[in-house]
Image (cartoon, rainbow, N blue to C red; front, top):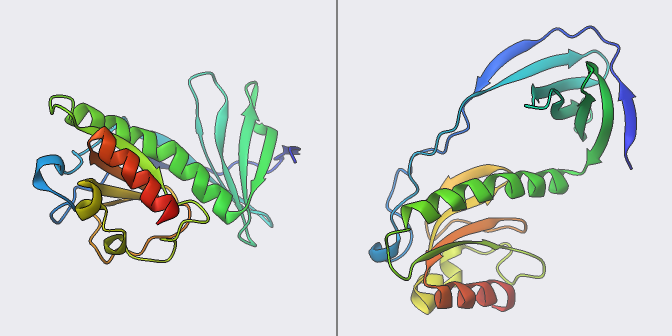
Length: 206
């Protein structure tokens, strides 16, 4: 449920630069070499994130949007998380907040992060005929929740390569065959349209 919150605490901010970039893959990508060029070094303009201690509550981390509002999260001392949006006329006043469970926060992070990575890979493979990039989710009741990437046999069964895995907003580039999959993961896959369709079926049905 949305709730209105007002932070009357004076804001003591610790400004930090957040560089939204992906780590350069350290090892060879998973899959056939024809379609496994690893993700490029993806960089966007740094964002200033303000970190504000909230005595007795937790920590607020937020940043300014182009429209003047601020958006961020409050991590409470008990580990709960709230997504917050400030009033445009008063950055200390919270217009609305949305409590999130850990798995919900992880899913939201994946939804925000995966499209950027997929867009970059689409651009990378634009000149490769017949090759596409697509996010493939590990959703319940996937038979591969709790099993390794190698157990999916996606490469041998479909020719598709998994070049990265998004988990809780973190990018795991070039996952090895022993990479353990879990529900909520988003696999960034590269291959033919037919292969990607088949890979999606395998991840869902086995």
